[in-house]
Image (cartoon, rainbow, N blue to C red):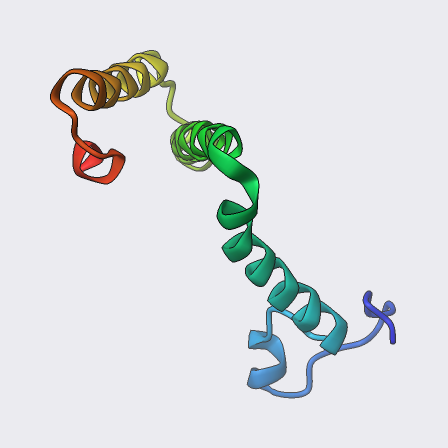
Amino acid sequence: MNINRPCGTFDRNYFQAKEIYRTPLRKILLALLIIGMYLLPFLAGDYGISILTLICAFTIGMLGLQIITGYCGQISIGHAAFMGVGMYTVGILQRHFGLSFWSACH
């Protein structure tokens, strides 16, 4: 089973060109990753979930900055400030008003 296609291998039709995961090994690894990500909150505990929440929040901010600066070529001076104000607001709503994470974010 070869993960990488050798040089000179071309797609013969449109459906081959559309495939994201071309080999069965990659499809199996993707399925295992999805199952693992689904089971991770049940196995991580409270501290692990809090760390995963921070990782997800910073990942969303990083991807937004990547879109603005990388793809659009714009300079973003206040991106970190907007992200910080949003995270601070969610923290205040959770701590002082007793809202859950999902209701505070929306």
